Image 1 (cartoon, rainbow, N blue to C red):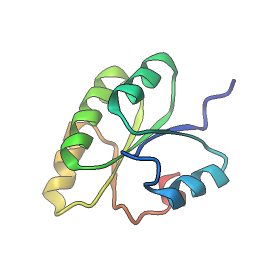
Image 2: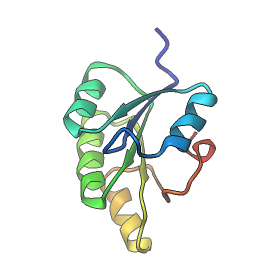
Image 3: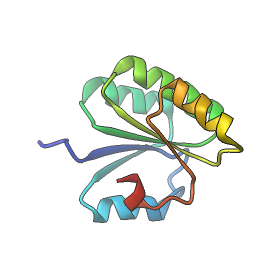
Length: 111
């Protein structure tokens, strides 16, 4: 099975970010939605995936980004949240994220 278009999306619940997930699916990505970090970590440890989108609070994103970066150095990590300022974005990048996008970003921008 070709997993090159798999995207893991940490949403916190099943109703969050419907338009972004629909956009990614429409663009050909296979989106796997996770509400819990432990389930996301299990998927990453068992299957190579190119991209993870982390949505939620900054402390949760920072924890997840640091852990995921330690698990897989080549994994693409996008933080999707509301950033108060550039310092918050820099902290997120230092935790292991590759990109910081605002929650209003489209699925096309995520892709």
